[in-house]
Image 1: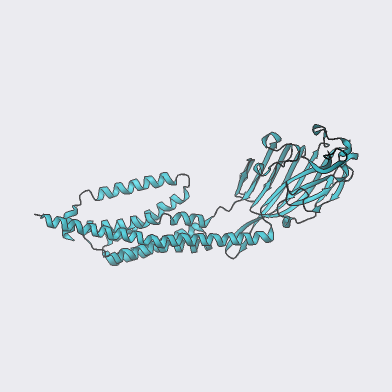
Image 2 (image 1 turned 90 degrees about the horizontal axis):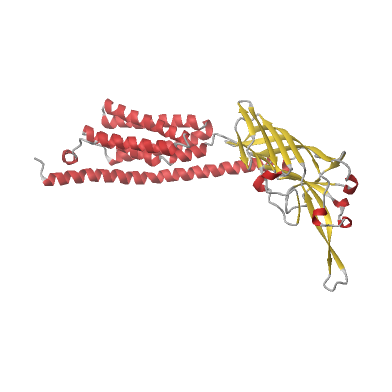
Length: 440
């Protein structure tokens, strides 16, 4: 018969082993945290590489305009009402139509081991303006400075311009000057000066120009036309459409075609204004040339499952101990745990070279083989070693599936933990913990 003292000693023996295992799990979380820091460091290096390539090729590009600006004089009497003072101010007009069509050739540039998506866009812009109407502001005709009118085309990174921009306006070709004269609305771009706009009152104010532009990652447009129609095609297979408006699109293995039709009612920008500048950034739409193989993001998500890896593996070893009356020293637990942590280091370093899928396969095969061979030397039992191998294969396969199911990861993770707990309860249902402690 088991005495009370033997029961107490057995209880203490099992609890001591469990306590040691829990402490080991907590200690092994430190390498896992260091691995997460390593992932952040490598992501920072990737960001620096992208910035370096973009600074030479061209950054994200936002195209805004054209915007027609007409200066006028505001008449103000002095305090004594004996003289007048004139202040130059500006009125801004947006086009009735803005049509954009273009083909974007995309490619990959390398900085060391890092990939950067870049593009070369060959685009045609066309449309027309209505003749500026100042009557709504009650501005007299003689105060309008028609000869100083100009157009502004916003280009966020001027380094990306690859060919001269010949601006066709009302039947004449005008050269563009670098720089924006309306920096409070468009801070980077080109200016097109218009001579004698008043003489063009009866003419159709049509415009057109071609723009060849380099950029990186993102190409966006501001829908400044009363009706903005945009059609873009590219051989890039993984576009991400972002911004305020989504397009009609066709995506295939040969690339994509996307089209937008945006009305002035869809944006919070007036067709003409003075004084306060509207914010067009909230209405920008465009394309991100998405790199789907974000190895660091997947590695980071994988590393967050480290505690699950370690805990479940230790549970396997612990139940092998108690069900097969074998002994595993805490040092052996620690070595197995270090092997599990090494998996993430292998995963990060290999994924930089061969991609995440093959890195995961090779790293998991390597670590599973390492732990299984070590278990064979510890347990010296083929059946037990087979159980260890099977559980590790299932565990690594399960985690990989979780990494792929972003939207359902929480559900699958919860169901997985439920199954694990059910298995543990089933295996331990007939374990007499007091007798176990006595035998050990």
